[in-house]
View 1 (cartoon, one colour):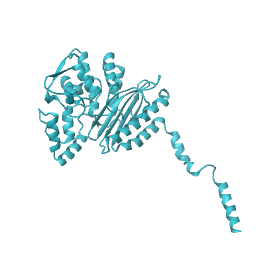
View 2 (tube, helix red, strand yellow):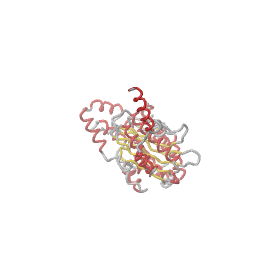
View 3 (cartoon, one colour):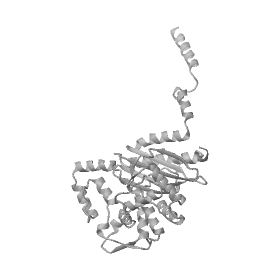
Length: 346
């Protein structure tokens, strides 16, 4: 008798329960809130979720160039540019060539004290004094392989950091600052307080190894808080868009710069990391200390247009691979948003 009553009770309960698995049910109010959010708001929320993968502070800015639809996540916050600052250096250099103040066939002698640590090929290929390279070739290896020796030489030839920053102001971009050479930035982020004027990569390595660990930590914190050689993601996207549209450079010059950026051999796991294979991306990556960046222009398939995008990570203590994964995930979310979200109707 007790068993029969129990079965009847269970049957009644089952009849009263809603159809479908309980775990599939959602809070109606939460679903309604989600439906009321705009596509941009949902994307920003997703970027915030993905940003946590980086272990640091993330800034994202993007604009669909043809429709001018924008998204921004910490887009007005300043981030160390690292090697993405080679884009404004390139703009200043090309501007001087366009004015006739420099020539691409100018030959530049490279001395041992011109060599720089970090990325690139010149420091590895340098064998003995007497090496000369054309301005055009220095530009190529700065943009394609992110060569630090070429960058500091070109920065000096282009008038120095101040000239680059003034050029950014001249084209209406106020939130990009170039203040130091690559060598000075590397030293500041590595704990080398005083950089000898005749330092070579080998001598710098010794100074870095001998630096006090406490000083290293202190200088690293100072570097991350320093406003020099920083930019906002919004400003970098404005620069990229201006390059693409020919606002700052002649069409042939802009094309040359974007072609070099399409052939970039660094940062392959960042903006391009999760995009469909073969997606054209003209970009420049940057890595220094706790900062990992990538900025460029993504071409959408068929007549989808182009997206100028900058994704910056700072103050992260995670491995570079984890930061790169976060950048790749965010880049794919932005790509899908502009590809499938019908930007013209947003």
